[in-house]
Image 1 (cartoon, one colour):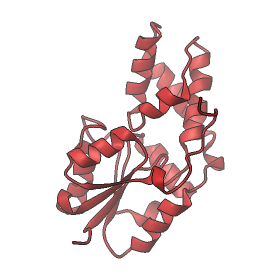
Image 2: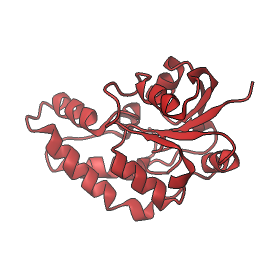
Image 3: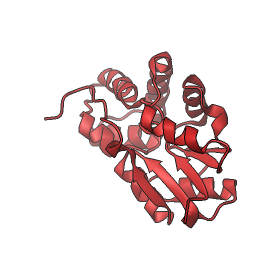
Length: 196
């Protein structure tokens, strides 16, 4: 049975933002003596920024408001948006289905940054719903982001296909009862530092 709706993650799925996010994290955390390895960064893919900041500060035993890290990191990332490119093979899938079946974006990011990113790569108006960390209480790997997107599209979750680039995001899609596509099989993930 063909899918009734498609739901896409944003960062690392539709837009090649992950290296910029990582660089913004590293630059922000360095000010406070906190290191972030790229493998750990990718392991937290799909987490909201506040959760990442809280986790990293606790891990480094640094006592300071996590929201301060969030504000600084997101401001740095926003300044990098002009250099962000679409991830062509995934955007091509969305283009093929635009206007044919309902589509949504389900992201762990902040709504204004997700919308700005989609606008920058020219596809913001392709989606009938955008669900972000501000719209659900429980974030990826919990299924809530994708279940809320299906609800807004008025489509049975079992008839939805999720496109994701992280393990927590794929788990969220599966826990929502949806089919999932790991987009890392469609393109080579760009890294800031070489894999060890």
